[in-house]
Image (cartoon, rainbow, N blue to C red; front, side, top):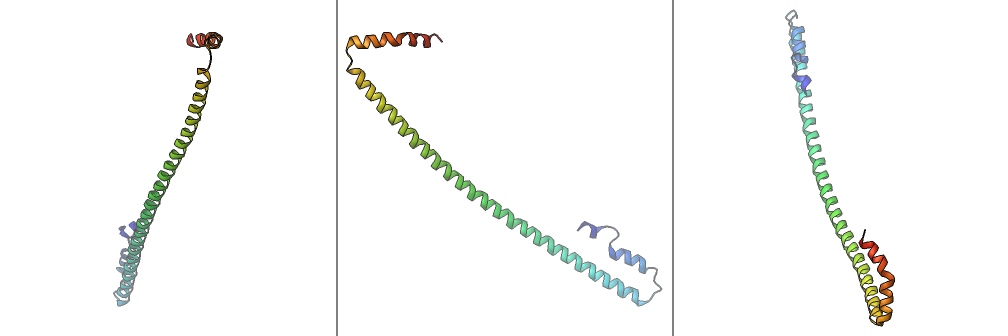
Length: 132
């Protein structure tokens, strides 16, 4: 981590402290122990950073796979929804055509006099709608 790389690491502080030592070998032993502990800490931190990076990579891959599966599921769902809507629209259109065909057949059987009365009856409404 960054705090290890600072100017005053634990080893530097101990070195400064030991520079005031009276010259006994005990100061060097302590310094060697502290440096060894500091190296172990650095190694553990580096290992932990690697594990964290691996975990992030694994999580990223899992999220990408989940997003892909969800996208595929949604695409399939949209396809089914469109197909259902198309079928429903076709059924309604078929019903409209059947009703129109029946009505047209009924109107074909009208004599001219009945047809004229029907036209005169609906003509004002047609004219009003066209003038809008």
